[in-house]
Image 1 (cartoon, helix red, strand yellow):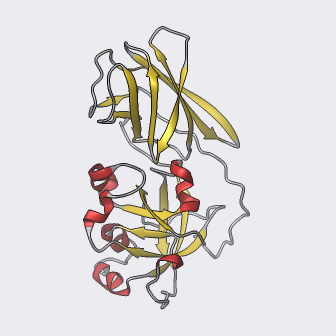
Image 2: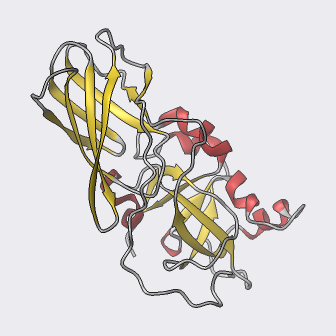
Image 3: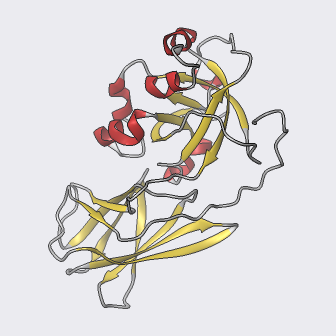
Length: 249
């Protein structure tokens, strides 16, 4: 298994109906909340406020060079807790303590913390943000005009953003952004003026373009977050075998 990479994305700890892509692994938890601010996705201190603090870091196969940032998962403990030693490469996830305790039965949160590492079943699920559009946060390193670095927040659905294009509002002269690292995209060829974006996401087994027609105002500023006016609801299809009815009910 790949070595553990510290990055942040959302996780939901609960049970649900049988899913095609249920995986079995082991999870540990962060004993200090400050560890949640140092992930490779680049969310920084913002991450602590995501999803009521139900967060996780994961291995490189789930990080996907940053494409996995912000993905949502459901996880539950398996019937027989593991007694394996506490070593990083035995786990797919390291959770926040809040998410770790959320997998326990009522009033048993402290008991599960004492185990340190437990066996789980997990699956990816669509992210849902009620009454919340996809948002574009302008990074502090941006300089208006020309250089723009952004990260996407509140990305719904069960997809991955694989490309981002931009253009001045009203123009058909599109440029493209590159993934800098984690959830951060940038370009040093951004025109002056208000900006529109096209987000290419995985949808079904193919791709789909989401067009946000007026996102950043002419006087966009570093450190600010802007409403895209659109939301992603698509669900990408995974190529995996049907799960055993006894795994997740």
